[in-house]
Length: 127
Image (cartoon, rainbow, N blue to C red; front, side, top):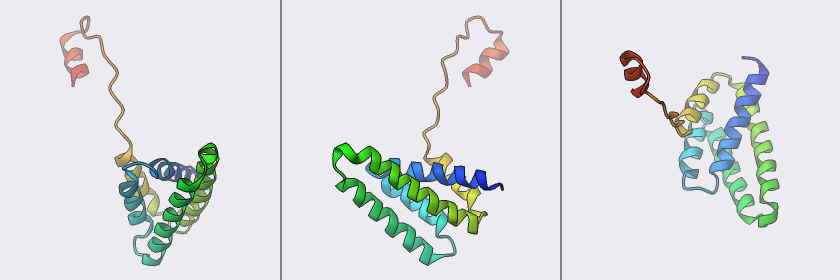
């Protein structure tokens, strides 16, 4: 996998982690990412968990007017760390993609006007 793909994946994962940091989904997202990154490497799992907790604390302590900047800084730092882990273990990339797909809300289907469609097309559109 080209390095750019790993960098993009790392940035997407970092963004999802930071976005979830102060929501009810924090533990679920963090746990799933740590499970993947720490697979076969318990020490790395501990380091990732500790760093995510520190990042959450930094974010919660940041003054409201500095939160956007703090989120950007944390995302950048996490992206670099995750990219380094993916560089060392590129086999983790597919598992991280699966985590991202599972935590992303499904996109709503656009409304379809079926009144002028033939029956076969109408049935497919309504599935």
